Length: 300
Image: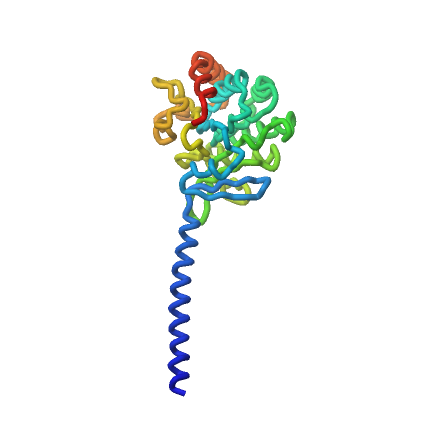
Protein backbone atom coordinates (compact mmCIF):
# COMPACT_ATOMS: atom_id res chain seq x y z
CA UNK A 1 0.00 0.00 0.00
CA UNK A 2 2.78 2.40 0.94
CA UNK A 3 4.60 1.53 -2.26
CA UNK A 4 1.48 2.39 -4.23
CA UNK A 5 1.27 5.80 -2.55
CA UNK A 6 4.93 6.51 -3.37
CA UNK A 7 4.32 5.49 -6.97
CA UNK A 8 1.18 7.64 -7.12
CA UNK A 9 2.96 10.78 -5.87
CA UNK A 10 5.95 10.06 -8.07
CA UNK A 11 3.76 9.95 -11.17
CA UNK A 12 2.05 13.20 -10.18
CA UNK A 13 5.36 14.98 -9.59
CA UNK A 14 6.92 13.55 -12.72
CA UNK A 15 3.94 14.45 -14.93
CA UNK A 16 3.70 17.93 -13.39
CA UNK A 17 7.38 18.53 -14.05
CA UNK A 18 7.09 17.12 -17.54
CA UNK A 19 4.03 19.23 -18.31
CA UNK A 20 5.71 22.35 -16.96
CA UNK A 21 8.88 21.64 -18.91
CA UNK A 22 7.06 20.92 -22.16
CA UNK A 23 4.68 23.86 -21.76
CA UNK A 24 7.51 26.25 -21.05
CA UNK A 25 9.60 25.19 -24.00
CA UNK A 26 6.76 24.75 -26.45
CA UNK A 27 5.31 28.11 -25.46
CA UNK A 28 8.70 29.75 -25.79
CA UNK A 29 9.16 28.15 -29.18
CA UNK A 30 5.76 29.41 -30.28
CA UNK A 31 6.63 32.93 -29.18
CA UNK A 32 9.91 32.75 -31.05
CA UNK A 33 8.11 31.48 -34.15
CA UNK A 34 5.64 34.35 -34.01
CA UNK A 35 8.27 36.99 -33.31
CA UNK A 36 9.07 37.66 -36.97
CA UNK A 37 9.59 40.94 -38.77
CA UNK A 38 8.14 40.07 -42.17
CA UNK A 39 5.20 38.06 -43.45
CA UNK A 40 4.78 37.48 -47.17
CA UNK A 41 1.43 36.32 -48.53
CA UNK A 42 0.80 34.61 -51.86
CA UNK A 43 -2.87 35.44 -52.19
CA UNK A 44 -3.93 33.03 -54.92
CA UNK A 45 -2.12 30.09 -53.36
CA UNK A 46 -3.19 31.15 -49.85
CA UNK A 47 0.36 30.59 -48.60
CA UNK A 48 2.39 32.68 -46.18
CA UNK A 49 6.08 32.88 -45.36
CA UNK A 50 7.60 34.44 -42.25
CA UNK A 51 11.09 35.85 -41.88
CA UNK A 52 13.38 37.94 -39.76
CA UNK A 53 15.79 38.32 -42.67
CA UNK A 54 13.75 39.28 -45.73
CA UNK A 55 16.57 38.22 -48.07
CA UNK A 56 15.82 34.59 -47.23
CA UNK A 57 12.54 34.81 -49.12
CA UNK A 58 14.38 35.12 -52.42
CA UNK A 59 15.58 31.52 -52.08
CA UNK A 60 12.13 30.21 -51.10
CA UNK A 61 10.31 31.58 -54.15
CA UNK A 62 11.40 29.77 -57.30
CA UNK A 63 9.66 32.39 -59.42
CA UNK A 64 12.38 34.86 -58.40
CA UNK A 65 15.20 32.69 -59.70
CA UNK A 66 17.35 34.65 -62.18
CA UNK A 67 15.21 37.75 -61.73
CA UNK A 68 16.15 41.24 -60.66
CA UNK A 69 14.14 43.27 -58.18
CA UNK A 70 13.24 46.94 -58.37
CA UNK A 71 12.29 48.54 -55.04
CA UNK A 72 10.08 51.61 -55.39
CA UNK A 73 9.90 53.79 -52.30
CA UNK A 74 7.13 55.84 -50.69
CA UNK A 75 7.16 59.33 -52.15
CA UNK A 76 4.03 61.32 -51.27
CA UNK A 77 2.99 63.44 -54.24
CA UNK A 78 6.48 62.86 -55.62
CA UNK A 79 5.10 59.48 -56.56
CA UNK A 80 4.32 61.30 -59.83
CA UNK A 81 8.06 61.98 -60.18
CA UNK A 82 8.62 58.25 -59.70
CA UNK A 83 5.86 57.63 -62.24
CA UNK A 84 7.80 59.64 -64.84
CA UNK A 85 10.95 57.69 -64.09
CA UNK A 86 9.11 54.35 -64.18
CA UNK A 87 7.35 55.30 -67.43
CA UNK A 88 10.71 55.93 -69.10
CA UNK A 89 12.07 52.62 -67.80
CA UNK A 90 8.98 50.70 -68.91
CA UNK A 91 8.88 52.36 -72.34
CA UNK A 92 12.52 51.69 -73.16
CA UNK A 93 13.34 48.32 -71.58
CA UNK A 94 12.27 44.70 -71.52
CA UNK A 95 11.20 44.07 -67.93
CA UNK A 96 10.06 40.44 -68.24
CA UNK A 97 12.78 39.19 -65.87
CA UNK A 98 12.30 41.88 -63.24
CA UNK A 99 9.82 42.02 -60.36
CA UNK A 100 8.57 45.19 -58.70
CA UNK A 101 8.37 45.65 -54.96
CA UNK A 102 6.73 48.88 -53.86
CA UNK A 103 5.14 50.58 -50.88
CA UNK A 104 2.74 53.53 -50.70
CA UNK A 105 3.22 55.68 -53.84
CA UNK A 106 5.86 53.14 -54.87
CA UNK A 107 3.19 50.43 -54.92
CA UNK A 108 1.12 52.39 -57.44
CA UNK A 109 4.21 52.67 -59.66
CA UNK A 110 4.99 48.99 -59.22
CA UNK A 111 1.53 48.32 -60.68
CA UNK A 112 2.38 50.57 -63.64
CA UNK A 113 5.55 48.56 -64.28
CA UNK A 114 3.56 45.31 -64.13
CA UNK A 115 1.20 46.56 -66.87
CA UNK A 116 1.54 44.49 -70.05
CA UNK A 117 0.38 47.13 -72.53
CA UNK A 118 1.48 50.55 -73.73
CA UNK A 119 2.66 52.45 -70.67
CA UNK A 120 1.82 55.77 -72.33
CA UNK A 121 -1.81 54.66 -72.59
CA UNK A 122 -1.77 53.89 -68.87
CA UNK A 123 -0.22 57.28 -68.13
CA UNK A 124 -2.83 59.13 -70.21
CA UNK A 125 -5.72 57.47 -68.39
CA UNK A 126 -4.26 58.43 -65.00
CA UNK A 127 -3.73 62.06 -66.02
CA UNK A 128 -7.22 62.37 -67.50
CA UNK A 129 -8.58 62.27 -63.94
CA UNK A 130 -9.61 65.78 -62.76
CA UNK A 131 -7.81 65.66 -59.42
CA UNK A 132 -9.02 69.07 -58.29
CA UNK A 133 -12.56 67.71 -58.11
CA UNK A 134 -11.67 65.59 -55.08
CA UNK A 135 -11.28 66.75 -51.50
CA UNK A 136 -8.83 64.17 -50.16
CA UNK A 137 -6.02 61.83 -51.18
CA UNK A 138 -8.21 58.90 -50.18
CA UNK A 139 -10.93 60.02 -52.61
CA UNK A 140 -8.30 60.40 -55.31
CA UNK A 141 -7.03 56.88 -54.71
CA UNK A 142 -10.57 55.52 -54.89
CA UNK A 143 -11.07 57.38 -58.19
CA UNK A 144 -7.79 56.00 -59.57
CA UNK A 145 -8.93 52.52 -58.56
CA UNK A 146 -12.30 52.95 -60.29
CA UNK A 147 -10.62 54.37 -63.38
CA UNK A 148 -8.15 51.51 -63.67
CA UNK A 149 -10.89 48.91 -63.17
CA UNK A 150 -13.05 50.55 -65.84
CA UNK A 151 -10.25 50.46 -68.43
CA UNK A 152 -8.32 47.29 -67.61
CA UNK A 153 -8.75 43.70 -66.46
CA UNK A 154 -6.54 41.42 -64.40
CA UNK A 155 -5.18 39.91 -67.62
CA UNK A 156 -3.68 43.28 -68.56
CA UNK A 157 -1.17 42.99 -65.71
CA UNK A 158 1.42 40.44 -64.67
CA UNK A 159 0.34 40.32 -61.03
CA UNK A 160 3.05 37.79 -60.17
CA UNK A 161 5.61 40.55 -60.79
CA UNK A 162 3.93 42.80 -58.22
CA UNK A 163 4.87 42.88 -54.53
CA UNK A 164 3.15 45.39 -52.23
CA UNK A 165 4.41 46.17 -48.73
CA UNK A 166 2.18 47.58 -46.01
CA UNK A 167 2.27 47.98 -42.24
CA UNK A 168 -0.29 45.93 -40.32
CA UNK A 169 -1.20 45.35 -36.72
CA UNK A 170 -0.31 41.80 -35.70
CA UNK A 171 -0.49 40.59 -32.09
CA UNK A 172 -0.44 44.20 -30.86
CA UNK A 173 2.70 44.97 -32.87
CA UNK A 174 3.16 46.83 -36.14
CA UNK A 175 4.84 44.55 -38.64
CA UNK A 176 5.62 44.51 -42.34
CA UNK A 177 3.30 42.45 -44.51
CA UNK A 178 4.15 41.97 -48.18
CA UNK A 179 1.55 40.66 -50.63
CA UNK A 180 1.95 39.14 -54.07
CA UNK A 181 0.25 36.72 -56.50
CA UNK A 182 -2.95 38.71 -56.22
CA UNK A 183 -6.32 37.11 -56.84
CA UNK A 184 -7.38 39.90 -59.19
CA UNK A 185 -6.61 43.45 -60.26
CA UNK A 186 -9.12 44.73 -57.71
CA UNK A 187 -7.42 42.71 -54.98
CA UNK A 188 -4.09 44.33 -55.91
CA UNK A 189 -5.64 47.82 -55.89
CA UNK A 190 -7.20 47.27 -52.46
CA UNK A 191 -3.78 46.27 -51.15
CA UNK A 192 -2.10 49.29 -52.74
CA UNK A 193 -4.62 51.62 -51.10
CA UNK A 194 -3.85 49.95 -47.76
CA UNK A 195 -0.16 50.45 -48.42
CA UNK A 196 -0.85 54.17 -48.90
CA UNK A 197 -3.03 54.64 -45.82
CA UNK A 198 -1.86 57.46 -43.55
CA UNK A 199 -4.84 58.16 -41.26
CA UNK A 200 -6.43 61.60 -41.78
CA UNK A 201 -3.84 62.49 -44.46
CA UNK A 202 -4.05 60.00 -47.31
CA UNK A 203 -6.62 57.61 -45.94
CA UNK A 204 -9.06 56.58 -43.27
CA UNK A 205 -8.38 56.07 -39.59
CA UNK A 206 -9.34 52.43 -40.06
CA UNK A 207 -8.58 50.66 -43.32
CA UNK A 208 -8.67 46.87 -43.42
CA UNK A 209 -7.03 44.67 -46.01
CA UNK A 210 -7.53 40.93 -45.71
CA UNK A 211 -9.04 41.52 -42.27
CA UNK A 212 -5.99 43.35 -40.94
CA UNK A 213 -5.82 46.95 -39.87
CA UNK A 214 -3.44 48.34 -42.48
CA UNK A 215 -1.29 51.44 -42.76
CA UNK A 216 1.24 53.02 -45.09
CA UNK A 217 4.11 50.70 -45.96
CA UNK A 218 6.52 53.54 -45.29
CA UNK A 219 5.75 53.37 -41.57
CA UNK A 220 8.32 50.56 -41.40
CA UNK A 221 11.91 50.96 -42.54
CA UNK A 222 12.17 48.34 -45.26
CA UNK A 223 8.81 47.15 -46.69
CA UNK A 224 10.31 45.36 -49.69
CA UNK A 225 11.62 42.05 -50.90
CA UNK A 226 15.24 42.12 -52.01
CA UNK A 227 17.68 40.36 -54.22
CA UNK A 228 20.23 38.94 -51.76
CA UNK A 229 23.15 40.65 -53.46
CA UNK A 230 21.78 43.44 -55.64
CA UNK A 231 18.50 45.33 -55.92
CA UNK A 232 17.63 48.44 -57.90
CA UNK A 233 16.18 51.38 -55.96
CA UNK A 234 13.80 54.06 -57.20
CA UNK A 235 12.85 57.06 -55.05
CA UNK A 236 12.50 60.84 -55.50
CA UNK A 237 16.20 61.53 -54.75
CA UNK A 238 17.61 58.74 -56.88
CA UNK A 239 19.63 61.14 -59.06
CA UNK A 240 20.58 63.66 -56.38
CA UNK A 241 24.32 64.19 -55.84
CA UNK A 242 25.33 60.54 -56.24
CA UNK A 243 23.46 58.02 -58.32
CA UNK A 244 22.20 55.36 -55.96
CA UNK A 245 19.96 53.46 -58.33
CA UNK A 246 21.60 50.21 -57.30
CA UNK A 247 23.87 51.14 -54.40
CA UNK A 248 23.05 48.74 -51.56
CA UNK A 249 24.61 51.09 -49.03
CA UNK A 250 21.72 53.52 -49.62
CA UNK A 251 18.63 51.81 -48.28
CA UNK A 252 15.49 53.27 -46.79
CA UNK A 253 17.19 54.32 -43.58
CA UNK A 254 19.66 56.43 -45.55
CA UNK A 255 17.20 58.36 -47.71
CA UNK A 256 15.04 59.64 -44.88
CA UNK A 257 16.28 63.17 -45.56
CA UNK A 258 14.69 63.04 -49.01
CA UNK A 259 11.64 65.30 -48.80
CA UNK A 260 8.49 63.72 -50.25
CA UNK A 261 6.13 66.56 -49.32
CA UNK A 262 6.01 69.90 -51.10
CA UNK A 263 5.49 72.95 -48.84
CA UNK A 264 4.57 70.68 -45.94
CA UNK A 265 1.33 69.59 -47.55
CA UNK A 266 -0.01 67.13 -50.08
CA UNK A 267 -0.88 69.24 -53.11
CA UNK A 268 -3.83 68.03 -55.19
CA UNK A 269 -3.30 69.62 -58.56
CA UNK A 270 -3.07 68.18 -62.09
CA UNK A 271 -0.52 70.80 -63.12
CA UNK A 272 1.77 69.95 -60.21
CA UNK A 273 1.42 66.22 -60.88
CA UNK A 274 2.27 66.64 -64.57
CA UNK A 275 5.25 68.84 -63.71
CA UNK A 276 6.61 66.18 -61.35
CA UNK A 277 6.02 63.46 -63.96
CA UNK A 278 7.93 65.39 -66.63
CA UNK A 279 10.78 66.03 -64.22
CA UNK A 280 11.05 62.32 -63.39
CA UNK A 281 10.88 61.30 -67.04
CA UNK A 282 13.53 63.84 -68.06
CA UNK A 283 15.83 62.84 -65.19
CA UNK A 284 15.55 59.22 -66.36
CA UNK A 285 16.25 60.29 -69.94
CA UNK A 286 19.32 62.28 -68.86
CA UNK A 287 20.60 59.30 -66.88
CA UNK A 288 19.61 56.62 -69.38
CA UNK A 289 23.14 55.16 -69.57
CA UNK A 290 23.19 54.54 -65.83
CA UNK A 291 19.71 53.00 -65.96
CA UNK A 292 20.66 50.72 -68.87
CA UNK A 293 23.80 49.62 -67.10
CA UNK A 294 21.95 48.63 -63.95
CA UNK A 295 19.05 46.92 -65.73
CA UNK A 296 21.30 44.98 -68.08
CA UNK A 297 24.08 44.02 -65.67
CA UNK A 298 24.46 40.34 -64.94
CA UNK A 299 22.85 38.92 -61.83
CA UNK A 300 25.56 37.73 -59.41
